[in-house]
Image (cartoon, rainbow, N blue to C red):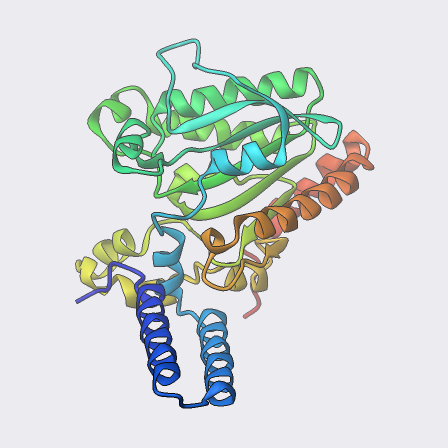
Length: 318
C-alpha cells in the first residue's frame, strides 16, 4: 500500500524520548555513561542527516505536503516590507487560493503572487487547499499587467497540488485562464522570479513558474502532474504513485540536472518547518542576488535571455 504520510520525524522523536529516558535511568543508578551517550547522540544526528540527504522522490513529495510546512504568507511576511494585499479579478470574484499584492524588498517595489494553502483544516477549506479557480488566474493576469505598467519586478511563490478541476471552474474557463497567464508571463518586460516552496503540481503550478529565474527549496517538488494522477492515467492504478514519482523526476535535484531549475535553496535537516528563519534568510540572500542580476539587464537583454531559457527546456541528445 502506498505510503501517505512522512513519519520519519515522528519515529525519530520517539527514539529521542527513549534516549532521554535511558539517560535519566543511568543517572539514577550512578552509571557514568556520559561519553557513550555523547557518541550515540552524535551518531543519531549523523544518521538523521544522511536520511534527509538521501530521501526518495516519494518521500520528498510527502515532505513537500507536510502540514507544518511554511505557507506562502509566512514567506511574504518575513521577506517583504509594506505588504498590501490586492483582491479580485474584476470579473467574477476573489480567489483565496491565490494571494497577490504589492510589497517592498530591499527598497525595491515588487508585485508578489503565490498559492495560498492553510495552516489548519478550516483555513485549507477557505483557501481550497491552494487550488486556484479561474478567477485566481485572472487575478494573476490583472496584477502582472499592473506590475509591467509601473515597472515592478514580479516574484511568485508556488505551492499547489494543481488548479481546481471542479465543474464550476471548468464552466468559468479554467483552461483558458491558465493559458492566458502562460502566454503573458514570457512577454512581461520586467524581471520575474519564481520560487517553488512546496508542492508544484500540474498547470496550476506551471502558470506561475514561467520566469527569468526558477528557484526551488531542496525538499520541494515540481511536476506536470501529481504522481497519483500520472499513475492513474498511465497504469490505471493510483496505488503505484510511489513508483511513478521516481519516473517523473519531480525533485529539485533532478530538475536542476535537466536545466529547468536555476538554483536550489537548501532546507534545514528535517524540512523547512524545522528552522524557518534560517531557510528564509537563505532565500532572502538568493532573491537579492538574482534580482540584482536581472535588474542590471536592459529590456532587450532580459527578453532575449528569457526566450533562450524557455526554448532550452526539453532539449535532449539521442
